[in-house]
Length: 345
Image (cartoon, rainbow, N blue to C red; front, side, top):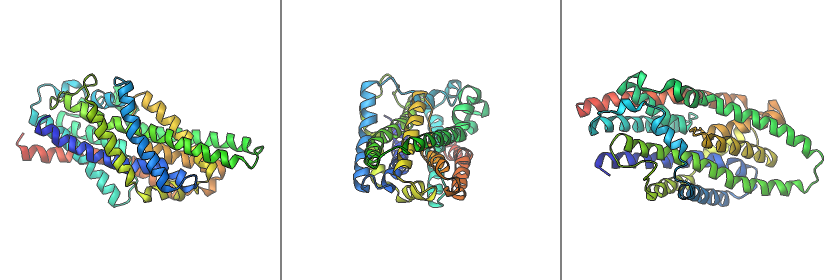
């Protein structure tokens, strides 16, 4: 791995830490708020799951990196990378990562809701538009439906599915005995593992997608056929560390500020998010995992009592989601202009 690749890999690790910090907190929020499990226990179990799932998935089926492969090949046309020097390739990928990280930091400091997935995708697309032209982006082949539309489509699916499941379970619960509360606690604990694994699978592949892109740009010798297992372990470890330092602010927002989540709401929201995320990962779509979880909570709350949902907070969150892709893209585009000038390309 050359010097340029090492710099980008370090940036990927930092970004992965942030993914673990933000999305990891989202994954455990409803379990903690509904008191199905103590916070420390939930964090430890979720962190272990986040560490093991990407590694085991890679060892069992290394070729099944559909999300990573799409980040590598489906955002920007391969022809745009042809004939690039190492310096030009580095300027592009550095600008994309730096712009993504810059917007993530700004959003965190200013408490602006942010979707980690679209921060990264926006950075890669924005830098490519400036470096290679808007025509280099595979808009109709992949980007418009699987990136741009998913900013709202994935949360809408999460909301609708959460709403329907909640209404269905409410009808079933009318005839349930008091022992159902114990069942709900068990379900939440099991769902915590499934949900953490689903988050880890999709998020780890985002980082792996950037590593694969290093190979496509000629800065490293990595592909889906020869990805070293130590890279997967490093990414899983970074997510785990981020998870261990997860943000209480995120937990409070998802579990309390949108809708006051109880045990049954937590179970439905978890099931909904797990289903959407597993299907998305199987289809190779880089989902905003926090988006789906948050929208599921909105749907569950609306099914319970429409007025109980904090629509003002929900509106701010949705606005933040819509801002993510264009602003992160703009940050990366501007960064490419600056880097290009500094490097004299």
